[in-house]
Structure formats: structure tokens, C-alpha cells
Image (cartoon, rainbow, N blue to C red; front, side, top):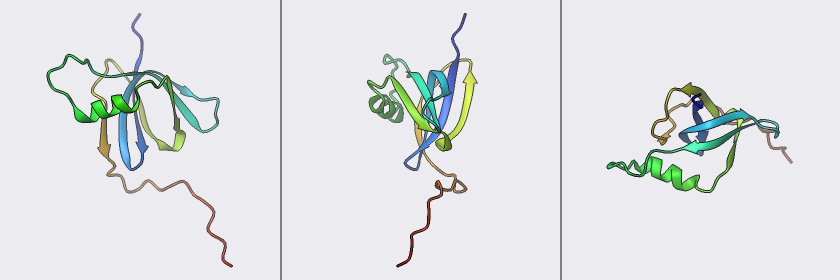
Length: 105
């Protein structure tokens, strides 16, 4: 039986992160999605993708990652993993989470 692989795209500091993992589920912490067992490309590849290497370094030693639900762009179940990447966010229609306006004195 083949294990499922998920491609998760989410916003983080005005960048779009696209990662592959084995498990995605709603967290016990309200408003978060959990991803576990991140999958990265083989180290033996001739070409090294700098953004995938940066992601691999950023997530090294991470057992589980909690992503705010409002940051999730898309979650897909895929047949096989691909190269994880970081790209610039070109989506201008995403508004920040609403906060209370400052009170005037």
C-alpha cells in the first residue's frame, strides 16, 4: 500500500512556500493545520535547487509544523513528491487578518 503524499502551499512573510509531506491534518490548536514528515529531494542530484536547500535547512530538525489556517493557499494529494520551493507572493488580493483599529485619544 502506497503512502499518500501532499503538496501544501502557504504564505509565510510575503513568500509562498510549497512543501511536500506525508501527513496533513487539523491541529488540536484552534486555527492551525499540522504537517508532518516533510519530503525533500535526493541529496545525490547533480543540480541543487537553492530554494529547496533553504527550505531543507529551515525545516531541519522539525518534527511537526503548525501553519495558521488563513495562510494556507492550497493542499493537494499527489502521486509523487516534487521539488519544494519558495517564491515571491504575487497575490495582492490577500488581506491581512483584521485587527481592531487604534483608539484615538
